[in-house]
Image (cartoon, rainbow, N blue to C red):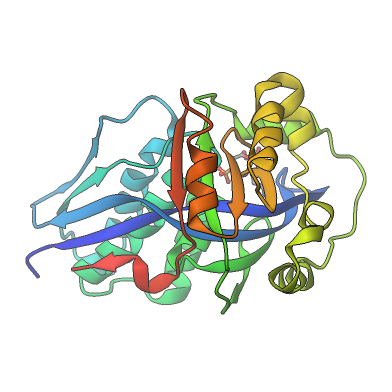
Length: 288
Ligand code: C5P
């Protein structure tokens, strides 16, 4: 095989409930993950050893190096027969913003290299590797709309077209995920709401969405960064049917019912990075 190019897409969380702290130190969550068409590009070329290059260059944030860890983990399988590859990650997805960019790069690297090296790993091995790289990585093996539970590894994919245009507002604030979880200070247990039912209801009737979905990280992250609360309010003022933080932040998003409304809303955030996106499914992800 001469080479491969793949798209590693971002995600937003519609509803993010943190249910309980587990014995292994992680938390059980209940969330809808929605893959969107903002994406990094991963290219794989023949090479002797394994080399991973990020453009622009990686920072010291561990998640930015997940693609390299993914490549070395897959390459260490005996069935990979010591094959090499040069992997170039062209970054578009803002890092450290709750959009899953590092996790998506890692999952896409696993999927791409597995094909490039003629399938050293079966599906189960690939899923286990993905989960060992990070809680959000398994979702990105088959990005779509999915109910994500457990630590992030219990994934129920939904075959659904979402009638929303997504406006992302990226204020450039880095929120540490371990900090966000520990600041929640979860001691008890709360019941998961039925997010699939809420989603189905929301497609017929958008008006109740703010009541149906919540992101449990918003109170602690907004307390630290009040500007995020103002962005959320402004997204609503610009006509969003729903506005929220994604993941543990700091990216905020609004859902709009048509692209003109989304464009008008996007123009209201003059000095911040803003993206207008659409939900995507698996077929978007790979191109040869
Ligand atoms: O799995 P990942 O490395 O992305 O997680 C980063 C940190 O976020 C973990 O070390 C943990 O503190 C927290 N986390 C958690 N529960 C999850 C996912 C992440 O507590 N479901």
